[in-house]
Length: 415
Ligand SMILES: *Cc1c(COP(=O)(O)O)cnc(C)c1O
Image (cartoon, rainbow, N blue to C red; front, side):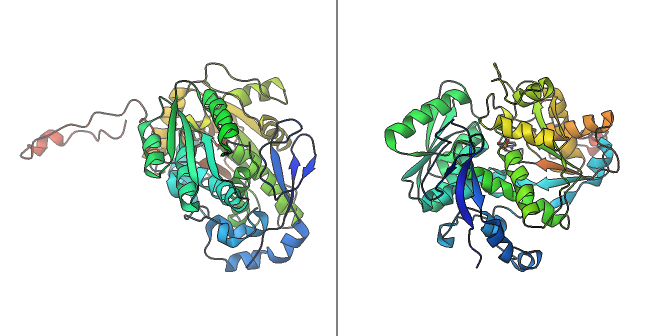
């Protein structure tokens, strides 16, 4: 079986290199993210289109050469990865983007792509002997960390804002995590978590504050290339919070090119945020390399309610190098996108996905997406864990002996 070709860690801003086989958080030089580096020549000897085609199971671990876990026994696998890239003809036509495809990340365990990142980070932390794990979360990360921590046999603490949706809290509790509710914002949860980690020795797996969640999410970019026959789409539209997926996919494309599996062409990378919390969009439009923290962040889409991201410059670099863009959609456009996705056959998607759907419509209207473009929109999670989009019709309640003539009215679902 294939093995990790991990060689070291590198500071994403400083360029400093570090030993990969000690547990590390951020770059000690500047507090910025550390990125995993691999022996790509060695990886290329066993990671080929043919060998991959023979790896039918394993989900994201099919890409073992480009993942950090050395001993296969430490790979925690709950079924994450290998999600379909679905054509969405009805939704695409409604949005003016007939070449639309959806990367169906809601099919991951725990209902979002947080599973990929946590599968990699938890497995590697267990391999390197972390005694216990913690992370702040306003939503899906908590459930994923709790589930993967339980599978690895590590104790987990999650710090959540008091007003986090009940579903997220309950999921973490059922998976045996210790849940601490912080009377404050997600940034306050992060600060309490950092102090708790220092006091207890728990390893902090906050977004991009350890190197391996991005490696798990990188597999989305690897899968895109494989699923499209070793080429990349014209456009990738991604709801951006901490930016792990943008950073991971951009890295995946570079590694695939170094392996000779794809050429130099890149998709136009589009970051989507909402007008209630859009630090990346604001920095992109202002031509800044780093994003100022957003004050008063507010959006129903908890996964992209991230006022300050430690990997901001990596996201902004990827957008610019790719010729992409960053868009902020309004909260009501996001709500509408979520309902539209459901009505046009994408199922009950997360508000983050709703924001992506709205953004695809806006980019098609402005000509940034053309009808010939192959557009991959990231459907990053299921809708069930969130408060519903406002504006749903109230279903009628009828007696069992109702005269059905009363019900022969226009279909109330088609608002
Ligand atoms: C966390 C999350 C995001 C943002 O992902 P990043 O890669 O951290 O930017 C988007 N959608 C959902 C559903 C999420 O849970």
